[in-house]
Image 1 (cartoon, helix red, strand yellow):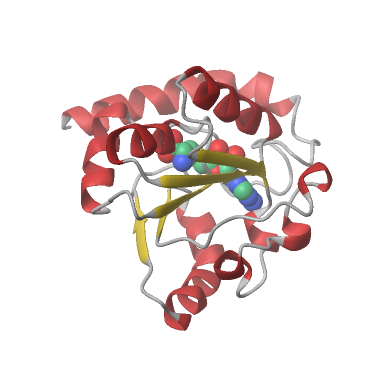
Image 2: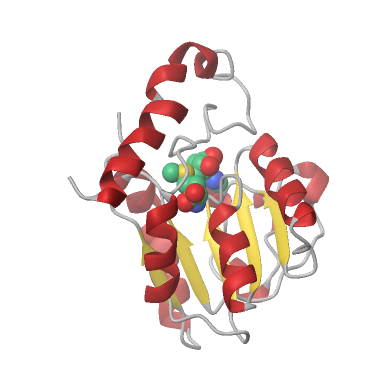
Length: 189
Ligand SMILES: C[S@@+](CC[C@H](N)C(=O)[O-])C[C@H]1O[C@@H](n2cnc3c(N)ncnc32)[C@H](O)[C@@H]1O
């Protein structure tokens, strides 16, 4: 097991396996990573892996990077701080979105990082490209607009990725160029 995998496994244990009972209490909540709309648990990307992911994305200040299922926003905070890009984080979990926004503010990154509660599976074709996420946004977020992405990061379960893949493929095909990057890690139950 390499260093990345060891840290990722520790995150899996800390955020998922050892919190089963706590997560079950949120199982009925619509805007929760443990709720019925979720296709992946909240397990943050290993810090050792973030740099490799951002390097693979070949980011610059011109980029608009989305993290689909952004969790606490750590990957985007690093992208904004290290590469100066504009970042948009979307997640089903309202608590994660609040934490991601708070941490961006603490780090002086609010002007470059936007976060919104959003159900990725409710996105319609073209929504990401036109920056109007429509009814996929949580009711309190509706009407917000976002810049179109040039790079999209996705770290979900295999099941979640399969559900989202047709939409991402259509967005990618529509052009202009869009880089799609994902982490491969066993998160499925
Ligand atoms: C494995 S975590 C990845 C977190 C973050 N991208 C990172 O790398 O640190 C997956 C995230 O996807 C979110 N998620 C699951 N289903 C979702 C959905 N239907 N819409 C939006 N986000 C979802 C979860 O709440 C969770 O925060």
